Length: 188
Image (cartoon, rainbow, N blue to C red; front, side, top):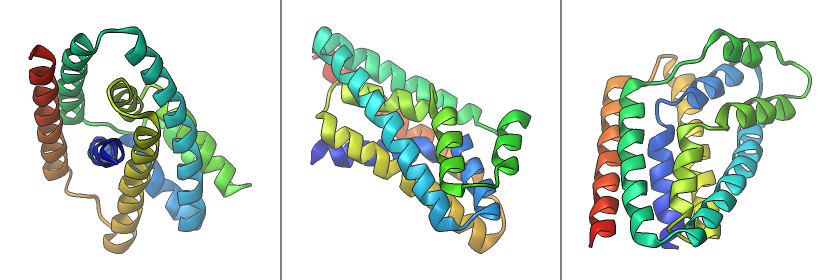
């Protein structure tokens, strides 16, 4: 349960202000919200299962104290990445806007490709090196889908952008706290 709760919170924060939220909002203007959420959930579950598998392999192959320090440093890097921000490039915007056939498949494929190597994938790998794989997988999937659902709903209700500055600084601060805690654990 700890792995689930930790992963849900960390990935939710990592996803705030991410390009995936922009993609979700774009898809929600073209397709039914339920179809967008199903596509996001399928893609996230697959990417994060692979991430957890990679994290478990790395976690069992390496000693735990150095992994904790490296995970802490990674979380500090995620904080910097969050402050830098994310945006959709022209290619990603075109992918999100031109697909019309099967909304669920279109959203799932676009999200799968967008998440490969993204900070949420890397954060999931990092979490899986230290926590249980099932809780990490389920928690990271729930956290990402919840963050994207929030973006869709807020965007649909308000018709405006999320207050990016507040979200960006809050998510970055949370990553710094998690990163420092991991580093302290690893150095003990």
